[in-house]
Image 1 (cartoon, rainbow, N blue to C red):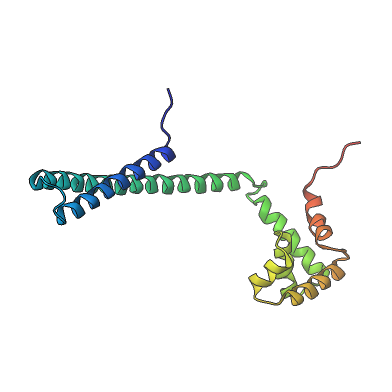
Image 2 (image 1 turned 60 degrees about the vertical axis):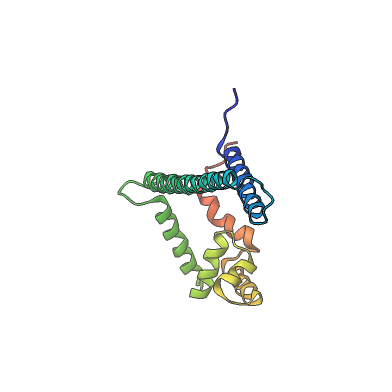
Length: 178
C-alpha cells in the first residue's frame, strides 16, 4: 500500500482547489447570462462550491501554519544540536578548540606583520572566499584585493591561496604513518 507523501498531497490539494474555483466561476458566469435553466438549483450548487472553496482555503491556511510551526521547531532543534556539538569541541580547562585555533592564527598574522586590512582579507581567504567575493564583502575593488593578497603571500612566504590555507590546516591533520 502506497502512502501519499506531503508533496503529492499538496499537488492534489491545489488541483482540487483549482477545479472547484473554475467550476464556481463558470457557474456564476452561466447564471449571470441566464444559460442555466434551473436558477434555484444553480444557486444551491454555487453556494455549495463557495462553501467548499472557503473550507479548502481555511484548511490550506491551517496546514501551512502547522507546517511553518514544525519548520521553526526543526530549526530550533538544529540550532541546539549545533550548540551542543560546539560545546563538545573543547579542550581541558574549558577552552574551545576553535577558539584556540583562531588564537594561534591571529598570533601568526601578528608574527608576519600583517596590517589590519590584510588580516581581514586573510581571514576571508581562510574561509575559502574568492578574490571577487572578498572584494564584494569588503566593498573594495578586485584589483585592491589582489594587491593585498600578494602582499600577504609575500609577508608569509607563501606562493598562493592554497599554500596559505594549507599552512594552517596542516597543523590540524594527524602525522602521516609510514
